[in-house]
Image 1: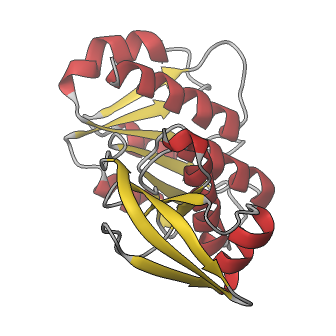
Image 2 (image 1 turned 135 degrees about the horizontal axis):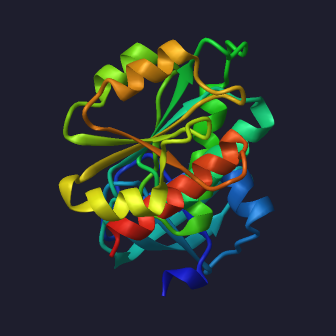
Length: 244
């Protein structure tokens, strides 16, 4: 039902018969981008209370008035999957955040590694991309995007009950991701994918990752994939296994 309506994420409470006003960027988006007129409907979600249908009651010079008429979806959160990604160039990182959001990732954490020279990333811009991708893809929650962290800090966050799928194309010993997921999928409810920079992790960093009992080294095939491609492939594979 909700697929017939344009969707908008809002950072405020949603309840039946609420009256909501939009100004500034939301006003511009509804009026000039979505081109929704008076008496038409808009689908609203806030990542916590499901999805609601709201009617455009009035459009004034710089304000739009809506009334919340009914709930059309109960809240459903995405699977507990994190993407731990070495920082890549701005344009590719923006696209990757969009794709990871569409694939249902719960959290994205950029990693500062030895072979990465990019120091500053626009986290606020990445969060905006995640919101836009959530609106477009139909998901009801917004992935968290953390500030960048050092590898040691990230590995500390991934406790023993969170599986770490380490995509390592430099290893001849790595098992294919499909075979590995088939063998371990019943052991974990929390998942993460860790992807290195274009030149790969350093030998010191690789040893740190593989010293963890919950880390599994896998390959994504015979070709060497760019980090954004590898992230998308790995996330898709995990989603397919844990949703079956």
